[in-house]
Image 1 (tube, rainbow, N blue to C red):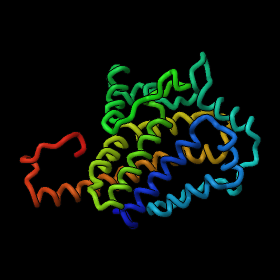
Image 2 (tube, helix red, strand yellow):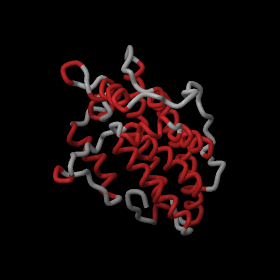
Image 3 (cartoon, rainbow, N blue to C red):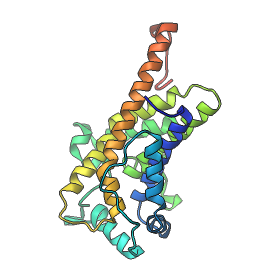
Image 4 (cartoon, helix red, strand yellow):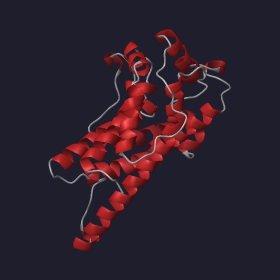
Length: 243
């Protein structure tokens, strides 16, 4: 179980997902700045501490001092380019056939979009400057960041955070944790992608952090569901997807 207050834990989990999303998106000057001054690593460490997760070994001992071009080249060589135009380490779940478990790509994407739609989200359109893939790792991390925000707000207002916790649990189990594992496994087979050290450390450890929170949320929701069953038989209460 969480060792911190529920609202604090939701905020820390949201920070973890938000920072990971920012760092795993295409590098901007702002990305380089938080890497160079150490703010990214410090924020990740703080979030892990609040979640009761030990900071794994191998974290960079000092901030990165590379320029923006080197950061972007390392990112591109790792996540955007490769043989025959295919990324060496794709960040989209549909690029890993085993994650789709035999589903057609269209059905797989629709299932992910069902999560987004339930909470009022949709992918960016072409007239908004870019097209966002629903199964992209950054999109998934941003979605979980939103769920954490909604969970934290519910806690602060003394409302039931259960729907947001169950949605996170399910999304982590079905999509986010398996994708981070696939990305890590593919990255570990690279000879060298020139990826910035903090980003490489994030890729190697993100699966364990996601699994940790998946397990925490599973325990929390199981306890809440047991308590609810003791008060009202669940078979008599029709429920929505995560309500």
